[in-house]
Length: 387
Length: 86
Figure 1 (cartoon, chains in turn cyan, orange):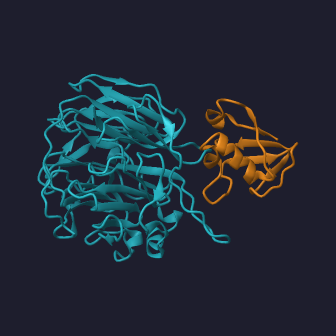
Figure 2: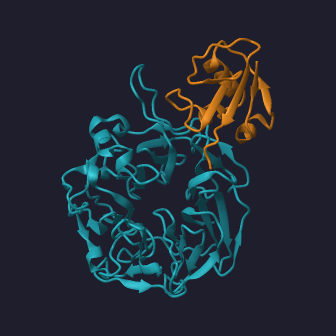
Figure 3: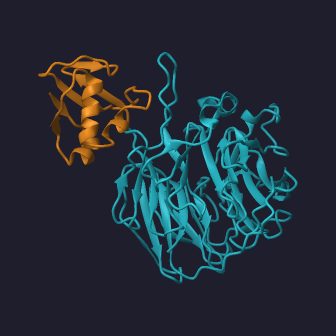
């Protein structure tokens, strides 16, 4: 349901930015000076851990949560309350309830997504897991509990599908969004399993899939086959959502309640398949995507080996290629759904991490790109933290 | 009884290679270990009380398949990260 209150557009940030980088072999922090021209890479944090997400709490700018596991050890959440200087493990990481005797219960394989709660709810965090589960912490990430009813609801369990219905390293619950105007207005998405909205703090949920295409041969009325890759809410216009989906790029005006495939306006030879979706912090008409090759067997690399971002400045009517600075050819990497982000400066800084372990940045909203770091492990996530 | 700790878990035992624990069965021993080294159990045992996919637990020289394995005070327990990484 649409909200009535308007959001306020934040003023551009002017402080320094730190990039919080999650990789297949640990986490890193790439700290920039205020000019965003020089950057210093930290030593690895939790070297060898598989870090899917590392997030700074914007409400206190000191608490950081890290979703981690290792190849052998089970999933957990590490937390720091001193900006990453020291870390402690959550006392009770996200976990499904123990099943009654004789029944098969689910097991969290990894925590995939972390979202800080509303500014009016300090200490509240949400987490999404693989297989799909929704969890909440009320104490800054120390203890976690299943949130809402969806983890055990027969209808949602059907929509979540099996491991075979998810991404290659497991189906995921992601894109947990809190409306900046209302802490009880929530969204989440599942790969696969569609996009869902609650306007009552998670007591009830409604599916939002109208207008979304699905893979050829499947029924779009079946929530199970919907595969949103990344959903974002416009901070300056919270009734507008953008989505990068397995089947295209979309925008929704929440008052209309229908996704519109704005990716149809992308160049046909590039297509509109990808993982990340990045929004301008103050202009609701400006958004970026990073297309990948979704043809034939889904190579999931930059189309034709030529990486490029695409930007729209009119809510998806037109898209402009932004590849200045990127390799001109033979660059067979791509960018995962959590690995591209924007800061809040003016002009907006864009940052992305590649599957080949490089960090690229643009201080000019994507018109010029520079490689800030290379030779890192495969990058899963990049968050721009305003310090 | 003595429990041998793999390197991946020694951040919990700081960094003892072997620790002493009491219990009538594997579940009790692992609960005792978790009380002394909080968080250790969940890294190797799932919320469904099963041994994680890439963890092996041996009691003396027998692989334990579940946590109900009965123990004697002089048993040797080895927690091992499986050779599954290639």
